[in-house]
Image 1 (cartoon, rainbow, N blue to C red):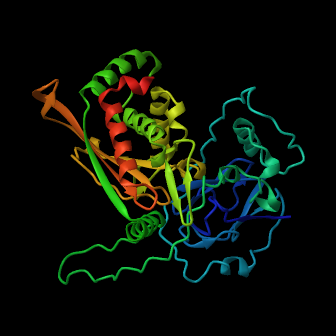
Image 2 (cartoon, helix red, strand yellow):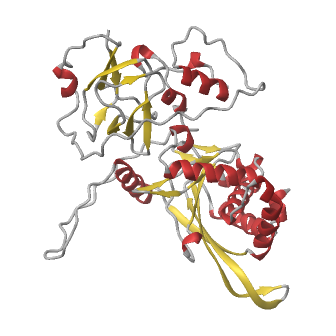
Image 3 (cartoon, rainbow, N blue to C red):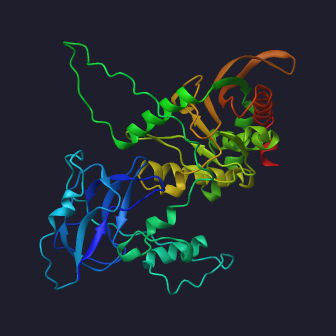
Length: 420
């Protein structure tokens, strides 16, 4: 009996996806855990793994097809030796006429699934023997300490697959807002050479969310100029001591830690507007903006206050690498109680960022610039970093925002506090 492979839901809000690339061809033999395709969502490109053994009988949907509804049959897997009739026409017709096919590169070679670390004895174990799940999903659940009994499978016959384990909902649901009016689109100037570029799902999402943010969230901005000479000296000292471990701290790692500690000092900055209510969070999760091809994404470092600066450095490096490689899972970029965007490495003096809804705070950081400054009562050269935060005025008042910025500057200028 053939098995229908369906377009999976790779995030709680995903309704459609793009079949970016097939990694297999018709007739290929596959086993559980083999990579079959790359699925593009509005956030990232993710891999789709085989959840049964067999032979690829039919690739129902062509590579490059966009706007495929979740649950649409995209391929058929047959048991070895089984003869499968041509796919039913209604399967292909399930993709709406609006869906388009983009030119796709040839299938890439299969890659091995990296091994997962052994489960720690401290991770709780569950009796999930009667649950239908792939071996890889069971291994991930064991490592994460998850019970498969609480997870709904999206694989064939309800089987739990790897993608299902990343479907943890955000800390809170965004507040519904009236859709923003579409901006008028003008034709390009006549006679000017132009290239028309089709927007990716990610670019469409960025355009929609940031337009809604500026139209529906009342932003206000505060700027602090911070002397980072002591921070740079501390970073050099710490990196010398961390050389043997292969860890190298960036200025951004220390800034992320300082931001989290400042939000603890001023808990009214660690909040979110929710219509008739407001959420005040008991943990600081920082979403950091990472530039990737075609846009940006904000993977989240969880519970930053509890992490050492070296742990922050390791997590930020790993998340950034996975983001640029298109390897983030939904759980990596969902949630976050505040965001940070640092353009200092590009030599930008100052930036004013746009709030990432439903969050109420984003910190924009520029580069350190040497300039005359008052140091110990005298004018001397100092390295000054400009930080500008955007606040949602529905949730954060000016005084609370000012206390947060003062706490942040104090931590940056007296950085030994970051280590305490």
